[in-house]
Image (cartoon, rainbow, N blue to C red; front, side):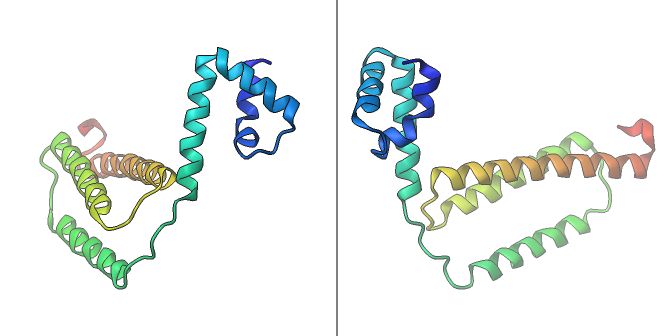
Amino acid sequence: MRCRKVRRLLGPYLEGELDREVASKIRGHLESCERCGHELALEEIIMKGMEATVPPVPEGFAEEVVRTFEERRAEEVALESIPDLSMFLCRVILCNIKWTVELLRTRFRLTLWATAESFIYTWRALRQMVEVTVEAVRLAYGPSAV
């Protein structure tokens, strides 16, 4: 059996959905192919992460997040000028890292997927903030400022 086919069937294999003959071929392939063995281990980790239960959100959490966001937004508005674009971008990155760390410190047990989504969201938000910042500098100081 080829690696591509084995990798495509790893999910059904772990869930016991395959007939004995196909499962036997996959077992034989996994014994001889280290790369597919690693894929199987990763698939097992993902399946275990999907089975984990996420505790309910504590009362008042949403309001606290909104309040914190509004406080930080007010601090950002208070800054009247951007003296150095690189310093501002460093602050943005540190702020995003701080927010991510604060979220991870909460009592939630994040699954693998939730962590990945949080990182992707943070990365997209950071990229958008950089684009908006560059545009703001262009508008404030002219096209040659950036």
